[in-house]
Length: 324
Image (cartoon, rainbow, N blue to C red; front, top):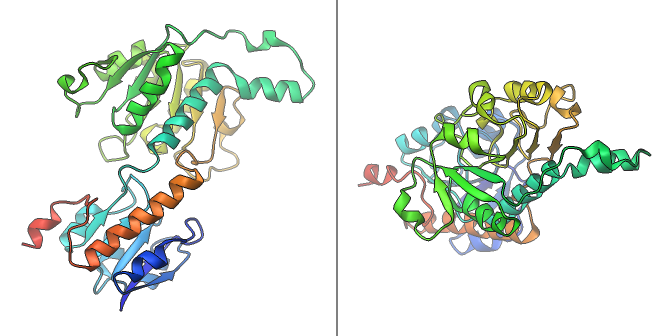
C-alpha cells in the first residue's frame, strides 16, 4: 500500500482526499508540521505528499527514500524547491485553476474598501464619530485607471469585474503577447508606465526570485500620491518596510493587503496601526466550494502519479527528461 502524508492537516483538514487516494491503493496519514524537522520526521517513507504551506526544501527532499510526487493545495509553488525535486525525479503538481473567482472577488473588495475608505469610516462611526468630511478626499471609480501587475487568470477576472465600475485597465506582464489580447479592453504597458498611470495597482504575480521585492521604494515613488496598492498575491513581492514608509509619508494614499511579508505579522509591525490600510489574513482563496475543489484536484494528481501516469497539473516538466 502506498503512503500519502498530508503535512499541513490542521490548516488544510483532509475531507475528500482519503476516498480519492484509496482508488490508487493509498493510505492517507495526517501530520501537523511546523518547519523542516517536522516534515522530515513525518515523511521519510512517504510515497507522496499533500502540502499547503510547509517548506519542502532540498534538505527535506534529500531525506526521502521513495517519494514520487509533491502535490500542493493551490496555485503557487514557492514553498517547494522545484530544482531539488527535479534533481530527485519527483513530480511537483499544483492546482492552476484554483480560486481565481475567490481571489479576484477579494481584490475587488479591497479595491472598493480602500478607495471608498469603508473600514476607516466604520471605525469612526462605531467609535462615536459621525462625520462624512473625514472621508475626504474620495474619487469616483469611473474614469480611473486600474493597473494589473501580471495578467494571468486571476488578473483577467479582476479586469472583467472592474469593467462595470468604469475603470480603464492597464496591465504589465512580460509573458503575455499583445496579440493575445485582441478584443479585450486592456492596454499592455511597461512596468514604470503602469506604476505612473495607475490610480489603483493590483498585484497578481507569483513569488519567484525574479518577483521578490519587485515593488520597493523606487517603484512606490513612481506612483501617484493619490494611488492605492492592493496585493492578493504573495507578501514578499512588496518590500513591506518601503510600503510602510510610503503609507506613512504619503507617497501613496493607501493599501489593501491580503498578504504580508511575515505571516502572521509581528504585533508590533507598524503597518498594523495605519488607518489608510485594510488588512485581511491571507484568506483570498477561501470559499467552501473552492476548498473542496482544491482538495479533490490535489488528490487526483497523487492518484495519477501512483498509477504511473504523468499528472495533469505537472509544474516541473523538466523532470520528464530524467524519467526518460
